Image (tube, helix red, strand yellow):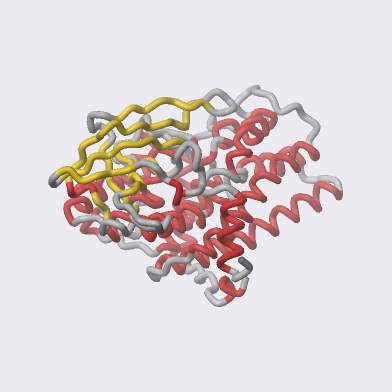
Length: 383
């Protein structure tokens, strides 16, 4: 854990307190009093393009990017504050989430100038959405086992294969696809990332329903999809390094420990002002874990702001965060004797039901627990 202690989280400045108040006022006005426990419990799976456009109008998407590309040249901590408040309120951020969190930063660093100028301003305005093209059936979190392949055909790429668990691919404009572009005995070599316009012929998007019967996830099949040479992000064969950097953004943010935060808030509300001692101990323990994870996550954000690639630290945040996210609904059901079943939107039982149905995915998305702990063991020199 000394890696975190060596890079303490940056201090919060007075103007950032003002930013937090502005975001809270915006959320109170925009979401309104009818935004119930069921809505908040969706966390960052709530999909509302109109809300994403309103965030873009506030200048709260692509915040850290240069103004040339639609950004506001704000600090990473400014963005972190906005993200925290959105998650704490359970705001419907899914439309822009992946583009703002990882796809945009990847294009900013490795994309062509045309890609930056064409795509980044649309992400910043809340009008361009991305999905992730990493996982595949039969390989899951073992990205090095990817079988999706792109071969050269003159100046074009021909992409063939299938990606799975692609969140909101049915609404996305683009996918960044991790695939094989060369032959090598090195499992991590011969891979690249391609920017794929999902309106391109030869792409089939099929729904995968979750436990609650909702359509967030998809299987996306590429049947000899012809892509221009400019679809390549960075250099050919650089895919593994790019995808590891992208995963650092995906694994270290507050979304990796705040997915159950709306339920925790509702739990505190239901327990009231005079909870028993067991409830006080449980809430205190969860709050302490949240505070530690927050400091760790902000430390990783500081490293990313310095253009460092902190895969070990990001992975630790993700693994510990998923543990807490999954503990919260289990602890909640022991403290409040209700059946976790659908009911009124403001009902605690509905929020508990939704969070319980989502919780199994918390230790799968962004890398399974087994994969993450292997990465941590190697990073600490234990294997």
